[in-house]
Amino acid sequence: MTETLPSLLIVDDEVRSLESLERNLFDHFDVHTAKSTAEAEAILEREWIHIVLCDQRMPEETGVQFLTRVRERWPDVIRIIISGYTDADDIITGLNEAGIYQYITKPWRPDDLLRTLQNAARLFELQRQNELLAVDLRMITKSAESTVSARRAKLKERYNDDDGIIRAKASPMDSVCQTLRQIAAFDLPVLITGESGTGKELAARSLHYNSLRWNKPFVVENCGALSDELLESELFGHKRGAFTGAVEDHVGLFERADGGTIFLDEIGEVTPAFQVKLLRVLQEGEIRPVGSNKTRRVDVRVIAATNRDMEEEVRMERFRKDLYFRMAGIVVTMPPLRERAGDIPPLANHLLQQAVKELGKAAPGFTPEAIDCMCAYQWPGNVRELQNEIQRMLVMSPKDSLLGSDLLSPRVVRAAPEEDMEDISVLSSFDGSLKDRIESLEARILKETMVRHRWNKSKAAKELGLSRVGLRGKLERYGLEKVDNPEAVPEEQI
Image 1 (cartoon, rainbow, N blue to C red):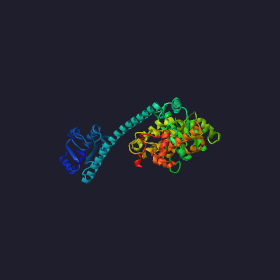
Image 2 (tube, rainbow, N blue to C red; image 1 turned 90 degrees about the horizontal axis):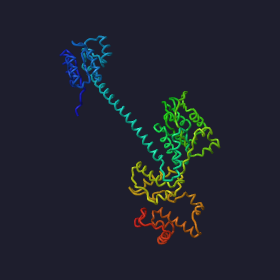
Image 3 (cartoon, rainbow, N blue to C red; image 1 turned 60 degrees about the vertical axis):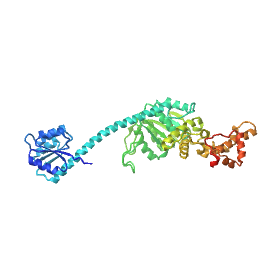
Image 4 (cartoon, rainbow, N blue to C red; image 1 turned 135 degrees about the vertical axis):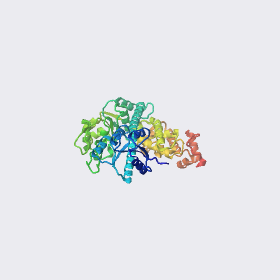
């Protein structure tokens, strides 16, 4: 690939001087020559010139006068004066009016002249790159603004459609979602309570994207994960030098969320000392960065969440009463997953789709038996535990196959926590005579064992201390024998 030389226009009415300059610079530049300013202007009209090297003393006009006109018509061209006269007025006029890059005196030294012109060529290239970058930045800014607006609009549309909370028809979550929609537009603080993993942050996002602040920032902070000092810095910001390691100013989350919403998760973990500082922000709408003596006004809607019983915390004086009532303008309680088992099938399929995208492994869905096991389990870790279980199932599954109950953790397959199995009250779910109840319990044990062993009769019989014939008879008796079970493993493969 041939390198393109920078273009140079030499203007001089002395022919020998013109030829000498061309001869010395020919190898390094694409040289154009002109014996007059009129001829030079014609070249500028038809050629893309990077640098003009012009003599100062010429018959029709001075070099400064010509370069002043060049500056007006071709401002990107690098302009240089070369002259045998060092008149201070000429130099000053050249700098002020013509905006010349360099004033070179005759006689010139070839090496110095070449170095000056090469620097001028680099300057021209940098100017062009700067212009291109400026255009790109303007386009990027517009593109980024458009992208952010589009994404926010998409999020708002999503939360308008289904509140962002996946659930079945006639779900216990319906009343919660109705409450969220009803209070979203009102600029009041909201306290969201519920066990860990019930979707409190999702509810907070639903409130934000259905409010009048939907096109402003939504920021999140886990208050239980930081010390008071770090939490104060994260929420309110700090000034450079405020503490060891504060090497520059830091804008806090309250200031970043100005005009929008801040979600304070695990608010029940905040210490009494920090509660005082947080109360001032909620009362006055002002923050003061660490190390600063000036306060700043912020307009932020505060949504907080906790898994604690806050009224009990207030009674025990572990949480300030005034801060609690300031934050709990409206209280929304998220039900645990065990109280909405009907939501598990659509929620599990939604979480599976997410896992497929994140992990890059395909799976068409769940077997009916896997869904039954998941619906029977109590899920003490709520949606977060369900999400982890589905991700594990997807990783452990054969490629492009339904996720079966054999991939579930043993605790889920048993369909109840151990303490419930040990509780004699489990028998209260069976009706009829003693014989009927024992048979119901036996049928339940048989089914749980068969599911866990993927309907492999040899393994199940060995665990239960039965012969294969005896096990087959019991399965037929209780109607548990399954034909064409998608999860069954053929005996000959074991």
